[in-house]
Length: 463
Image: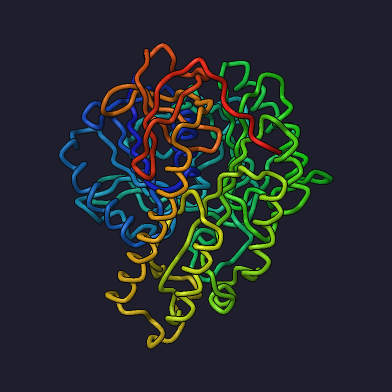
């Protein structure tokens, strides 16, 4: 049996896609390798959101060349592969396969084409010749690029190889119909494709039957999901009421599609985690308009007020980009003011990274924010967030929380997450992994907690 090793960079969708590729390869006789040196196929599944991430991947592919031996295939998949295309074939010491996110069904055929070996018989659905493929085999320094877009590809009928028995990603949507001016995702993942509700619910039921306690619904703008007369609040409610589900989360919603109906489902369904990640990106209307975010700061803050009124203990997180071209000092200060007003429990903070092909790269050159200014803005924002996060988490020390134990911690003990998605490390037996335990929060580093097991019950969150 051949072995495949997949290294994942980027967002939760990439993690889910790696599980999907492992499932496709398992159907075709591949087992999972724990390390690249043990693999016949080495794939780097990539992100294209920021330039730094791409440079890391190119460097990593160069490092992986040390494991090349006759018959070993090294490939780059995912968003960066779709963006850079065949140009990747001769980068970083040699790449044999470049494959975009819509082409994973053809992965076994692509590997067979590269190695010159006949593929195993296809599944009962059959497979067509590889669409969108360019290039040839490895001979003469060539390679294979498979970069087709498929407007109907939702990967139904494929069983992912899950990397966790504790929490499972369930993609409900692929692609994106929004066209934020800074974002490459619609250009590398295509338009929005929503799965059928019956398929989603069947997958959730099978996961619960397998003993998975936490379900995370996943989409580029997950709350824009719809199918015929179904909308996302209805889907979330049905998932939450699936027999045996203990926790349900969803990520990442778009503020435009965040409705009072969704808040009502979050507040009323006990298994829906009282936690919300709602990207804001900027705290100034002019910048939001130039980003094509389609909401104002007033509208964003109104939606935050909806959820805080319904769920006073809601745990909030967000994404913010600073130094977008043309962002003035006053507009940047408005973002700091919004952070102070909302007081997010967590935040993912970035400086603008130009992505070739996105509208923002066509803005006048004199609107570019100098690197030193952009870095200073990011550092100030990080410092502010850390102060707020420390204040919030320090106030929670002493509280008893129900924690889902996920794994052994790197520095000893166990690691798990609260309903609010906060990380807690504590001493305990590894046999507790996958179970819910009550933990008293004893201290915080600011971003994570230390705790101790307790027989006390957690305080009920007020809805």
